[in-house]
Image (cartoon, rainbow, N blue to C red; front, side):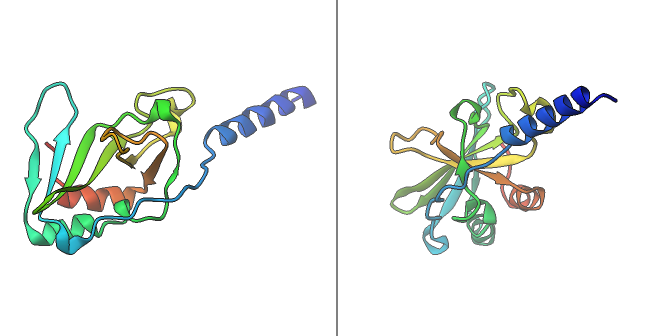
Length: 154
């Protein structure tokens, strides 16, 4: 193998690593578990599936306490890649306390994440009520599996 082909391999490897680099950012303050009366998950799919409501106190505590909604682990997002699949509303007796958005992989899929960007992520809402495309939180598989155990998909 020539030195030139080794050089290109290193260049490609470094490019892939740089494409997957994450810049940490401050996360939002999670909702307070005792104040949440229900959690509503709505699919953003065009099939207009009915929203699912979680009002069991034990499941609400588990969802709100999930590391998915903690302040740690948030990173700067590429706004083009933050296209959620679900909306999650944390409701209190007075109304909506917080809105999160849940997505999977690089959605929509773009280079270089066709092959090796995987897993679920959450994002917060901007002041407008739309998804905040400036930051998101990648969810390790263990956290997403625990979250889906308590959070029903519509």
